Length: 413
Image (cartoon, rainbow, N blue to C red; front, side, top):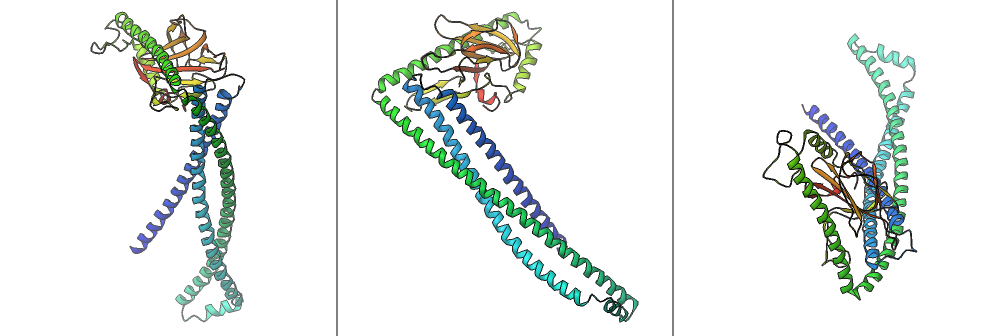
């Protein structure tokens, strides 16, 4: 019973150590994947927000862009530090393993050398025969024969174990060398990232100091921008409300179940219900509305990066992309409306059952109201500000009239 418990404890310990190693590897892979994503994002920021120095950005926009870049770079430094710390723990583990393997090898080789000496002394066939013949009875002779065979097997196993341990030691040493090299690379990259961060922080502080000299003007600009955003959001919601009202008149109760207690819900046919379910089923997997872009302003209420007493309310996301970039539908649907105000940019709304996606700040459209569109179909061209060379798409998702966070719907947003 005690023997069984001992073996059970050994097996559990081995399984735990193997699972722990896999967990470590998995964690390291996750960190490396995230680090590469952040490095790519910084490249995109430099390309999309800072590539054209000939264009004059407002101080407010420049600080916003720098703030975004700083947050990504800080994240990169944090992730790289986590990787380096994890590698340090793995290096320490492997160093301890090498130390233990060396001790085990030394003991195995010492025992093996003694076996060889003993075996050499008894290698004479005649001595083995005499050893068997000197037995008192057949049973003793049989046991002595078993002992000779077991001794030979043990000697062979000892040699094999030494070879296995030696190979394990060599592999661990090779892994250790790679880990140390990887750590050196991470530390070097982090040093460069820290220097870049300090340069960007210094630039941002100079601009903020300039803005704070005329804070009232800056505050007025921020409030004006928010008012313009609120106006666009209201227009989109009004269009959706009108479409809901129209759907409730158009669809008969026999064809669609209408909840009379909720006036701001689309009345859906069987086909549109299936489309809504399909849209929901792809939550987190929808494609980006642009081929290449970065989220400059995220969803929800957030403090302004310069004056944290000021609040930005974003009912969607603002995506910076390349000049003259096309916008594409993120899912199959029908063009619900195209808003073309006398002043301001064009908006396209695409309906996906009870869901609506809106694409704002366009200069050109390729679709018409009521037209069916497919996933990734180009539906328009995004407006580029001629003064700042900024190309910003305002993208929102609604369930009926309720806004949704696009980051939960769009793949890796």
